[in-house]
Length: 193
Image (spheres, helix red, strand yellow):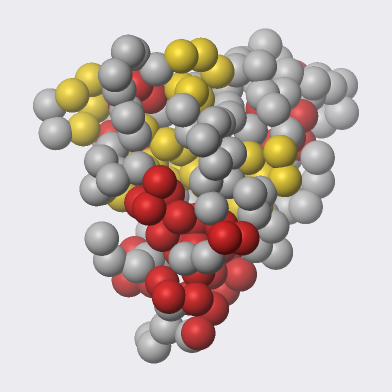
């Protein structure tokens, strides 16, 4: 598939997508999560991890993901929410089906998205990665708007963090434990490094 103008790196590397000194992308709506902490001293992001999420499972557009990442999820609102009560998780970014971008954790901080994980012999991927959650499931295609936002963000993050040289799925860093972003994620639509 040929990239559209909005998917091209030249159209996305502009001030609207800049990542500021604190690690906030100016294009994102900020919803700060308490589920973060400092990266190990001297550590800079070198890995981008793609996930998928929907809350309740298979439902899109609601407040569930934001509530989960801000520890405000009402366990009585849905049976699944009771199952995940008390989980303290986050990601740096969340891309809705519409392409809207929300940022929960500044890139300079460590988000709690990877869990038990390793990449190229390094354990604890949260230490050196950025996490991007796409609103979706393993068995549904992602939207054109999501790929456009992901590519614009990928270009901006690489400009801000030169050590960021790899992009993988959650399943790549936690094989056997995680399956996301799933077989419907089209890696061919992600801009090359």
